[in-house]
Amino acid sequence: MQSLFSKFEILEVNGWGNVDLIKLIFDPAVVNTHLGYTISVDESLKKKILENNDGKNYFIVWCIARKPKELCLN
Image 1 (cartoon, rainbow, N blue to C red):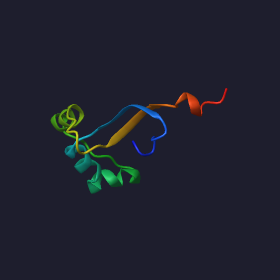
Image 2: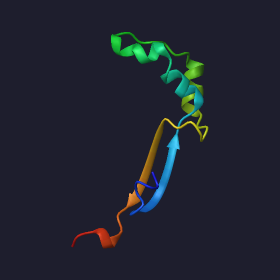
Image 3: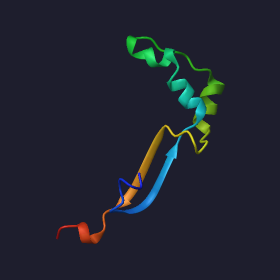
């Protein structure tokens, strides 16, 4: 992200995710949900997945940046 926005003032680069979420996403039962069926996720697993950010296994990343004044057109 930092190299993509190298010409910008980076205000924040971060991410969120965890290994349990990544495992769940790549579970064949989840991958095949587009075929019209869904899987149930145990409530305790759901809570564990949603409340844990392990800082290594990101599922989503973001960058908040500002364009420098010299790149803005007047």
